[in-house]
Structure formats: structure tokens, C-alpha cells
Length: 272
Image (cartoon, rainbow, N blue to C red):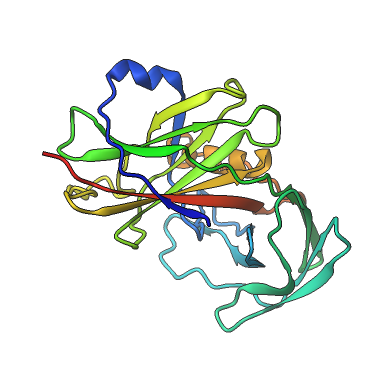
């Protein structure tokens, strides 16, 4: 079973924040990259979720002044292979996503992506780390807000297979546009992690509390490889530094190709 429930609660002092370093990234399951240039660049988003068929979305970047809708590219040649001997050319579905029929996410498996479009070839490789479950999920009260944030507790497995995490949060089975939370344990290998996940909207002008008393909070722990983590980590810097996120795709495309395993844990937001 991947979904577990926790009913523990805690209010850690501010010093507990020093136990881990948590980076915030403005990331969505479908990325939208607006370049500070009029020249379009191919954007590839390849995702392989554990137990789910591989899928690839291909679009083109646009200038910040361009308010038109992102349109998928459906005439590319998209191929995925893995180290188990599978080889599949993906076909686009009605929404424009290329969906596999035989290749799906398996822990510790390596995947290779090739995209051919407009005379160019783009490639990437990713490996799915094994899943890491949270030991418990509690609540943390940050003094500057009126609600309690979820706080994760787990031991990072010793070794290099699990060093990069992304935490996706749902409230009452819905996924609002929150700032996703990511974590690298490169400097904390094998340590016990106690880390609050500060739940904040992507839109800073939204002053509504994202968590209310009685809400059901679900935290999904996604285990990433280094290339996928680097993409999400640098996505947070796009608007501030006017730089593009670091892609793990060769050939000049933006975006990423990532396979991830996952576990889930739930808690009810209850406080006095």
C-alpha cells in the first residue's frame, strides 16, 4: 500500500529548521516556460511515474509578451527505451501528449528518450530511484501565518540511490497551485530528516489561507534522480535571474525527462 495515514502533531521550535535545507520551486506538472526572447525553443516534458505509462508533452517556448495558448507539437518522432530491453515509439493522444502502451515506471530502471523534430534530435536519460516512505507526518506552526503546515519525518537511506526528493501536496483530494517543495540530502546522507513543508500559493497575490482547520492533507513523496531534481531546483530562479532552468535534455531543448517513484501519507489539519 502506498497511502498511509498519520495522526501525530507537533510544533517544533525554529531551531528545528536547521536540521534540513529545503528549497522552494514554482513547478507545475505541466511546465510553461516564457523566454525573454522572441525565438521559440522546443520544450520537452517527459514523465515516467512508477506504475504508470510513460508520457511526453512537446511544446515551444514563447516570449513573455505572447499571451497565446501553448499548443502541443504532434508531428515529432518520440522513442523511449529502457534497460530491460523495451523499445517503443510513442503516438500522441487527442490532447497532444505522446503516451506509451508498453513502457511504464519501474523502480531502479533506466530510461532513454529520443525526440526527432524539424531535423533535430534531442536525447535524455533518467533512472527511477527506489521509493522512500515517510515515517510520520505531523503539523508545524509557523508564527507568521494563521494555519499549521505539514511537517515530514523520515530517514534518508544511506547511499546514492535516494538523495533527491519532491513533495507534492493535495488538500481535500485537490491540487491547488502551490509552490512545490524539493529537497536534496547530498550533505545529509543516511540522516533522519525533520522538515516542515511551507504550503504557499504560486500566486503571491492570493491571500486566502491554503490550509483550514479540518482539511485533509496528502503529501506525496517523489524520489527523483539528480538531473530531474536540478531542473526543478533551477525553475525557482527563472524570474529572478532571467535564466532558463537547467535541462537534462541534450540537443538544445528546454524541459526535462524524469522517472520517479512515490509514496503518500495523509493527515487531518486539526488545531485549537
